Length: 425
Image 1 (cartoon, rainbow, N blue to C red):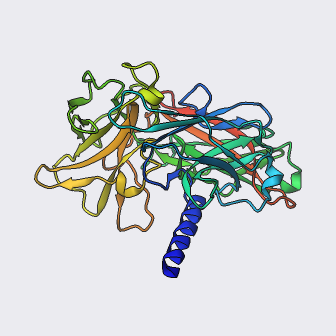
Image 2 (image 1 turned 45 degrees about the horizontal axis):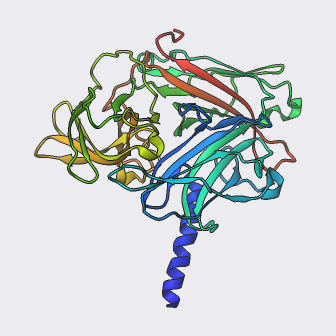
Image 3 (image 1 turned 180 degrees about the horizontal axis):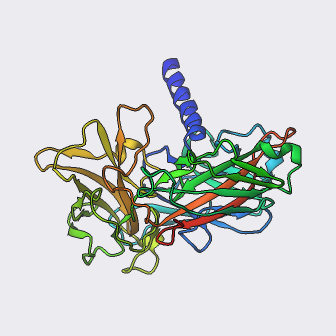
């Protein structure tokens, strides 16, 4: 019995530590369709201005039959998402944890689930500091029973940011990459502390590929310029692939066939071909995001069906990429464990395949390959999608600052840049 208790305690501690080290992750089985966005806009990232009164929506499903007691809390974090050394009562006004009381049983679905939702921040629990926050959702008011975590940001706009998207000067990267030069007006920061800031640049809200320029190229009075040729250069990729699951009564253009007799229904997509050697073609996409929606029912949040979606990726020569793993990549899969998105090679058919349980909606995704010989290597689109500088991408520039007397990184500036066919050459 003692050994069992030690094992349970060890597992709880491990889950709690993982929740701190791996933001945006699901840690418990049976959690589906986690959506966290600015109120009324599923495509808007959870970023709010300090003291603005803006709100977010959090939606998720428990794929069970009985309601559970879910609670949430906020963890203030530094720029690298490590926990800040600040007492919770110094950055939260009100209660430090709250119960999610709004839920509803699924209606007329083959797969039963319970849908939970809450508008954040609630009046009884409000962040009062700018910076990065980790939203933690857990069971029974026990912070060791973490269900999932999501990132959110609160910005205190004091530092104007100017940025653009250009082609790199390096001839080997000009046709495949995009560069983000940044200028920061730091008049609001004392001159002798202006070097304490940290710049973070995200492509399509992907934190795992974030660029952090280390040294400014030029300092002119209150203007700091980051424009080095060695930093803030991103593989451009291509427009994301898409699949429309808003109806399972009719076949949309990317669906090959549906088997509605199984539980849950099986939905087979048309095979996706290797695009690494094909020319770039522009079309509107969601840059990896997804939207829970449905054309057959009144409310997609608790009337939408879950389906097993079968993805297949066909390499150009129908041979596996040597020394590489292939993943289905997008916001719909980033919360999942790697083994749930890593594709399996089918030698008989000469293709990669993966089945992922998704709720009805509209999804954008791509295939990325990772070199297994590089420890902690990042998946990239070079071998599967190709890189073209004309690709439309969204870049988010964040400026963090920590004074000598502070114990955490404040978020003092934010800017968005759209790169695409109008890129500066």
